[in-house]
Length: 353
Image: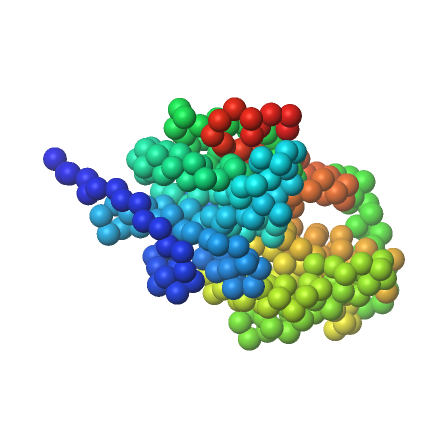
């Protein structure tokens, strides 16, 4: 009979130490199915470098020497957490690292270790919440580890539905295969394609390591151009944000988890779309188009090309990620729920929320 090695929990709270276990973390992320690029080291280490100023800690679970689970957390200061009473506002809360720029958040854990990790996690969390307002776990996927992990009987919790992520279920390839796009959208696309062909040839280009930097610059430029006309700053308005995305996109490309597309008309870039990919799911993270070409619907045209790419690449799902913008449903998308789990000590933290 094989005797399992003991499961241990350790805390890592410095960037140097995080970089030390990055190769193990990456191997675990590659192995675990039904997780997303938002749990990858490339994404979260870039978050640490450029976006997070709060104290953070990585909870590492090891079976002997083998890494089996990673939980990246940060402690959010009181002034950054809205509260309904002064007693709550005096204490910080525990949050998931990557909140704000990530559409799915969760613990990374081997499926066969969920139960054992839960047993070790329960007393650790109960101890943490002796001096924290609560644990606020947002954007949890339906089958996520943190949505269902058990907690100590000494704690209270509530689970709410969060912001949904509309998804398109892609049809099978082959003769007679059904394309999932609604008829009204098809007709609109046909009109756009006919108009574009009178101007010139469309070409879709996917960035590789050599062209990534210039493709990112095109994305930044197109996005800024459109939002500037609206009098708004856009997503990439600061040097920190731009540095974050350059590092994160580079890391994801090296992990075969980034597909950055540029759509050209007569060799002029008119649209860009950054997508992430893992386990046969393509995630539409952000897109942009040149407003000078708006009459040709370049945003829709690049989505069409990327949907075709996704199906050809064997993806079964195209995930528009969080938000209920109307254009997503014109592609036949259906809401996929996410969840918010709030955990606290005592009986008042969740009251009135």
